[in-house]
Structures are given as C-alpha cells and as structure tokens.
Length: 198
Length: 198
DNA sequence: CGCGTGATTGAAACCCTTCAAGTTTAGTGG
DNA sequence: CCACTAAACTTGAAGGGTTTCAATCACGCG
Image (cartoon, rainbow over all chains, first blue to last red; front, side, top):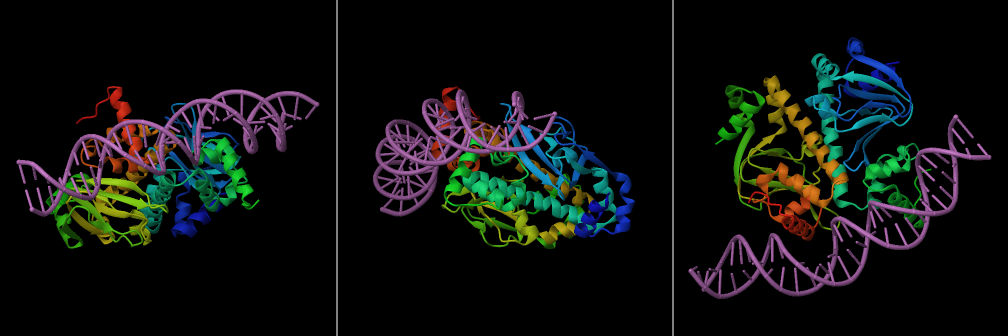
C-alpha cells in the first residue's frame, strides 16, 4: 500500500528502495472519508500528508467567517502547513478531505531521517521548497496583476483536472472572488465561445 | 567591509569566523548608486544580494506596463530571485536600488560551499527558505482577505522603518492598490486619529 | 419525492480605479 | 539661497469590477 508513495519518492528523489524501506517506521497510511478535517486551525501541524488517492484542500477562515482556499492536493501531491511543522507554531489553517482519500502521514522526523541517509533526498526536499516558493510567488503575482477572469484562466491552465472535481465555490475561494463572480466570469467566457475541456 | 555580513552570518547561522573567511572568494562587495538595476527581467539571476546599507526592491512589470513591488530589502536583508537562481530560469522581475547601497553579491556556489563545510549553515539556509514561505503565505492571506486599509496597517506594523524611506507609490504598489487609493486610506486613517510613528 | 447544497441571475451598493486637476516636496543649476 | 522643474502626493468626479443580498433554478442523495 505504500507502493505508490515509494515509487513516487524513488522516482523523484532518487532515494533507493532499500533506503525507503528503512523509513517505513516513520510512515502510516490511512483511508479518510470525505469531509474529514486532518488539521485544525490553532493546532500544531505535526505531519505532512501525501495523497495516494482522493483530494484534499487547505483553507483558512478569516475574521468575518469567510473561507479562503490555500491549496488543493489531488493524488501525487503533498499537503501540509510547512510553517507550523517547521517552526512548531499553531497553524493558521485547516486541512480537509474533499473526497474520500488514501493518505500517507509523515512527520518532520521522516524528512530529517531521509535527509540523513540520502543526500539525494535532501536535494529533492530543497527542490520541493524552492518549487513551493516559486508557486506562491506566481500566485501573488496573479493576485496583484490579474482580473478575476485572468486568474480563472490561469487556474484552469494549471489545474485542468481539478475543474471537474472541485465545487465551483471552492475554486472561487481559491481565486479570491465570490462564487457569484466566478459564475459570471464563466458565463462571459462561454458567450465568447470559450470551452474548457469537459 | 565584509564585517557586517560576517557578523550577521556568524550570529544567525552559527558558522565560525574561520569558516566564513574561507568563503571570502565567493563574495564581492559593491557600492551601488541609487536607481541602479541589479537584475533585469528575463535575465538569469546568478547572485543573491545582501544589503549592508541602503535599500533595494524587487518588482515586476505586468502586461499593461504597471509595476508591482514584490519585496523591499533594507540593510541586513537578502534579496534575490530564488527561483531564477535555483532553477536557472529567466527572472520574472527586476531588482533595483531605491537608495545608494552597499551590497554583497553571493552566488549559489557560496551557499553550496557554505552548506558543505557547515551543517549549521545548511540548517540556517533551510530556516531562511521556510521563513520565506511563511512570509509569502502571509501575504497571500492578506491579499485574499483584507481591504486596502487592513493591508496598509499590516504593512506598517511589519515594516515601520520603511514608511519614511520608501516613496508612497511604491508602498501602494506593494499593497496592490493605486497611489491615489493609498493616499485616501491614509487620509481616512488620519481623520480617525491614527498616527504612525513619524 | 423532497430536501439541501451548489450554481445562476438580477439589482443595488461598495470599494477601488481612472482620469484630470491641483498642491506639495525635493532636487538642480544659476 | 533662491528660482525652477520634475516628481510625488492629494483631491474630486466619474466609471468599472466585484460584492452583497435575494430569489430562482438544477441536481444528487437519502
């Protein structure tokens, strides 16, 4: 059952199968029903989650009670509150399953141990961090520069597969607009003969 | 002249003075006049910049020609396009001196070499990355959740010292609003007897 | 079948932008 | 040190994009 995570890591990080096997004690796998909260705001995030199947999201709730989606994580993605894990701070957000999902839990110890025994894993982990920064930067750029429509087009070009799986109001939340606005954006695009893959 | 960078690194990263001395070949220092561009959009960012004195900023220019400030870097800060350095991609933005500045240039080789000879430097570097992620996440949260006024108040609580040194239109650009809007926000705050340190 | 959640649509309100003046500030050369 | 100019900041009025609120429609699930 860890096979998917194993082949993922072996392929991406260059860690060997044997090395991975030695890390098994740091892992646990769970099947999580749809709508389950894996991380509560205010709690310290002790684990990161690798999604073997299903779909998760991270979101915050602001002072006026509105949700803001921070990240989606379909199969093959990792989702966590890095800052909370790394700095041992209470988390600012929630992590929840959007679909029933098979999830691998791994702690910071896993990463430390893996970095210890495999320098290529250490490099891989840094690549992950750098990539995360790149992605956050991209999102900031779009929030500063782009209209709702442009942000939506960007979203579907990056995550075309999520269009069908994520409720529209969550996408709106990710884009920083209301569901009503997204609906109007889509209507406008349809009028101009735009057709996302569906 | 490298003393400030040396004591900064020794104190923060736990690298020893001797180790730092051995890294000197990877460093160069320059005095840069105000308004000089250190990194051009489209160029590959080969160096990071430690600010010994003065003030720099990173900014992008969008398709309609508008500037968007990504980061300010006063003395004691590091400014760079991490993604460009790490992935060898053309940079999306510019880095420019707002004031005449004394700047230390260091390449990725410096970081690799320092990580090689000092595990505490390696840890420090990861802390830097994690911290960067935390800060970007915070900014996204504010762009999604907060009004112009809230973003401004957040800005001056985090960077009170920059208020006096950075032209207002650049702060507006950082906040994602027009200079006119920021002016009105400030007027509104003044009317409500709000007084930033000045 | 009916209920609840999500999506759509309309109208009014709101925040912020745009454009177009003015005013202030800062820097430069005489 | 003043005069001049350019840049930065302010202010007003009009406009645009997005939100809010409310009502309606569509659909999946018990």
